[in-house]
Structures are given as C-alpha cells and as structure tokens.
Figure 1: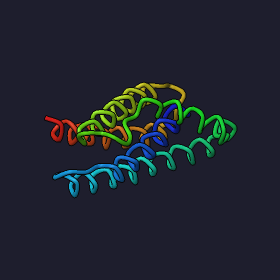
Figure 2: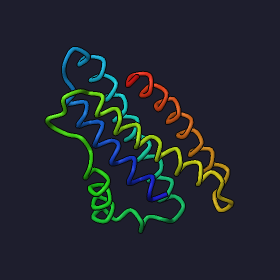
Figure 3: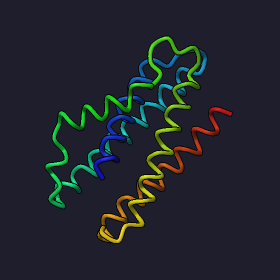
Length: 139
C-alpha cells in the first residue's frame, strides 16, 4: 500500500500546484476542479496511511523515503510555463490511471482483510469518476 501513499501524496501536491497555476478563460472552473482534487487526494493519502499504521506497517511511512519517492513521481509533472491547462489534466489522468491499476491489484490480494479491500474499492470507485471527468474536460 506504500505505493498508493506515495502516489496520492504526489497527486495531492501536483493538483495543488495545478490549482494555483491554472489560468486563462477556464480559470474559475479549472481552479475549482483542481482544488477539489487535491483535497480528495490528501484524504486518500490519510486514509491509507492510517490503515497501514493500524495494520502494523508504520515503519514503511518513514518521512524521508516517502518524500523522496514523491519527488521522483513529480519529476516530469508540468509546472510553471504551461500554455494550456489541458497539460495539467493529462498528467492528472496518468496519475489516476496508475492509482486504479494499483488499487485493482491490491483488491485482488488474498492477504488483505475485507475491510481494507472495501476501503480501497471505494477509492477506486471515486478515481474512475475522476478519470471520466478529466476525459470529458480534455476532449
């Protein structure tokens, strides 16, 4: 689950940056959308981290390695100088797709409790909705 923790922290940081940097005629809609996403990603990060602690996996949450992995995930993320907000959406879509793949794989695991699978499936459900919204926006 540590891969999800890293991904959702990276998603939270990226979407917060996109929230701040988006511009042009669709600013208000995009600004609001990315604002919602970074809150959602932070919630996922928090829920999964707390579940890991509850399952005795606290040692995997050491700050420095987690943040190093987050930084690596953000290395290719668009930032200042973006000419069109669609670039932010395209990167967020890649993150959401990665999250869905990780979640699906974990939900198939025989080692996780039904409660943990339920938590992960709920997040997967919400990520699929996010993917739909992003695809509608970048058409």
